[in-house]
Length: 137
Image 1 (cartoon, rainbow, N blue to C red):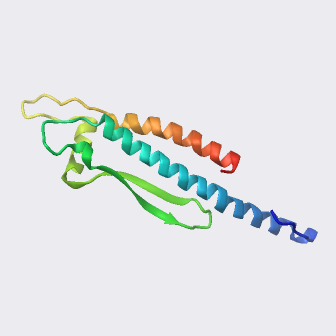
Image 2 (cartoon, rainbow, N blue to C red):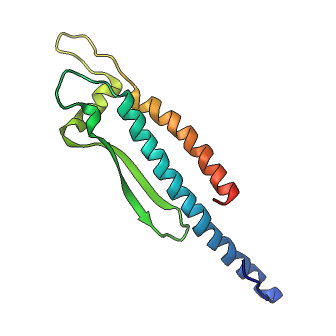
Image 3 (cartoon, rainbow, N blue to C red):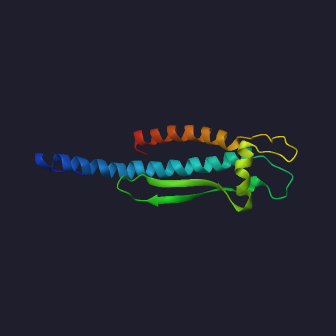
């Protein structure tokens, strides 16, 4: 850090500026880095645990993620990614996750592969994000 000569009347403003800079640089970078890692892990885990049917083109091949928000806001925490299923298979996500009614009157089983993967990745993400912010990485 640089050395500042500060008048006592300017102390509050200077401290606020230093903390805002820290927030934007360290916290913003930590959020971005850890979010990217967590989303990559979520895509990998859901692809590995997604059910595979008899079709040639499998549902798991269309699981992807993309960045949907990357702006420098006043807080510096505006970054996000979204998990999605591309192509015509996006319609199957709800049916595979929650089960559905079959033509013969029975119900198909719910796989809950997204919920399980999300829960695991979320716990790791929160822990890694706290650690990154506390250690200033």
